[in-house]
Image 1 (cartoon, rainbow, N blue to C red):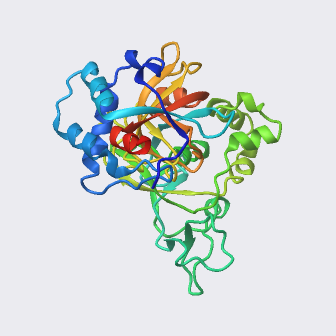
Image 2 (cartoon, rainbow, N blue to C red; image 1 turned 180 degrees about the vertical axis):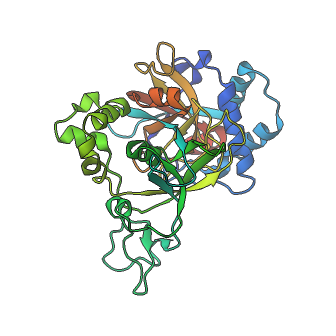
Length: 368
């Protein structure tokens, strides 16, 4: 597969702030992916960044000690060539933020804890071209098994009105429907259970319908100006309009199912789509149809200060994806776990330049 023309090779000196970034956390994130591919290689994205071209750098990451930031920076300079991602004439990249919420939960329903997080139902099946019935929306990647064949799965409104009640799918119960919704949006959470357990839940599957964000809905209704839409402003609106929560949330028909997962390292996030734990401030979600997991990206967003400093200029590793992350220069920055990370992630929506670090052998073959 040829390398896409959206990549324009540049020098490391052209990366704004490259020499000032601490590359060691990014190296450690890259190293986790380098070990994972020994079990199952990542799929090559349609932009042509061949997963096999990372073999040399991944082998080196698994074996070469990297004790400090300067050594980590030298590692990336030795194995990669930066390339500005230029998807369309006149377009610029965009970054948003995501995080792992923390919430109090109960193992059983109580008068205070009434909102369940559900496990994957047995009748939820994967849908592809091999089993998709004629007339079913080609977007749907999940469906419901019936005697007559697969059909669209119950949507959010149906589930919240009891379509799955009585199946024993409840992993835990939360106090607040809005908290549960944002856990759905983020795809994972750490739960402080009232029986003393610390539990992590992470994405297992979804009902399959298209995601519709409440921010866009509220902006379209004239409730919040689009430029003021943040997680914080959305939460504030819901708090002020509790009688309209279902009206807005049910516009998002997609419903997320979860599974329990261990918290092996409290400093790291959940295991995400690339099958490694996310690294706060160093893992980025990308369009997995276009990009290849494990690819390093240097992100320059000078107006983004929520992560600290006078702008965001940082090396990230592609280790997750999301249905709203569409495009060659589109990314979601993982901010970490808990309320502080949520305050950061909730305000991130900034223009950014994306520089993909491409394996030297791949760039050399393209140019030759």
